[in-house]
Image 1 (cartoon, rainbow, N blue to C red):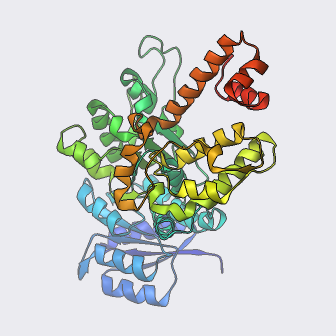
Image 2 (cartoon, helix red, strand yellow):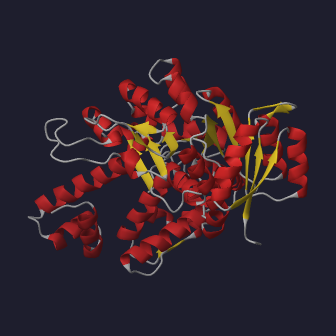
Image 3 (cartoon, rainbow, N blue to C red):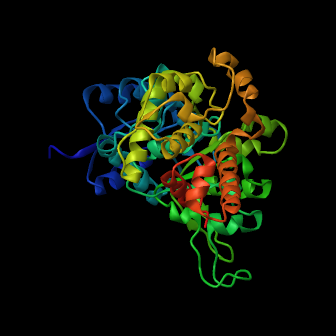
Length: 452
């Protein structure tokens, strides 16, 4: 049949080849086999495959060489490594070399079938979920290319970057462009879960396992089963949870609190933090073995000051979204406003840009926003990306950490509005005049800041 999917199995053990041919054949795949790298190269040159499975050790070389060849010459063919049981280092090396995933000997057929299904879903998913990041700068082009490559893999990815650069957005794109796109994407802020509840939140619990456990509860790993679990601010995990997380990643199973048996889970791990994880490892605050497992591939998301040419397009997209959300005409930026944004340091990155524009839309009278409407904090002009850190430190908002900048600004606004309302005996019209804004702008702020 013309639409029959095909696979290449490379292993020098006859029994393994026979097992894989039988298993893949039952999944309606046409299977070719090779006992060494030389034969595999011949097969690859003569045929097109939807999947390749290769052993690590082969008579005429290392399976990593074959993975590198396929990654470079046949990038549309996912290749998975067959490793010895418990050989974590070999699995991580294979993923770094470009392997889609790995499976350990003795081969667990359930795990193998799941791996094959993900690989076969990959091409269709990538066509239907192109994804989009705004910006045509060189750093954004490189970021898009890297996301495209990582979406073809099942390797754990560590997304690094300053607060507000859009690390969760990048994680979602990796998920949406990959083979798990039809399954859940579950984001979790590791710093927002109380330490005493972490095990229950991550792994679930059984009814009666502790005071207050009135019913069985599914954990985050079970909720993400088949999909992607995004661990945001992973540096905030306490050491005891780091140990448990490492075990789940290695064993691919979880034990709910109070349960006697483990449950298998199929989850891709993406993680992020604005902190320097390698520095925390050297200080003994983050486990080296866990860092090794989640940092198979590091993806750095550039700060906004390193892609200033993207600011006009980003701002236009944000203004269009705000207009759609509020059912109002789209505001535009004057040339002076654009220039002011492009010379501002943006310690809070894209998140800060969104906050600045949302505030300007709420408070400005005209349809065209000026530099004055933006109310940017006073700072030195941004001369280059190399001195951006110095510029950021001169901003009066430097006292508020970048991670808390939106909250910091909102709190200032909330305090000013509440004070004005109190002084005007809660007459909103007078309070708006007192604040120097329109009644509509005040009403918008009251709703946004949830001021009763």
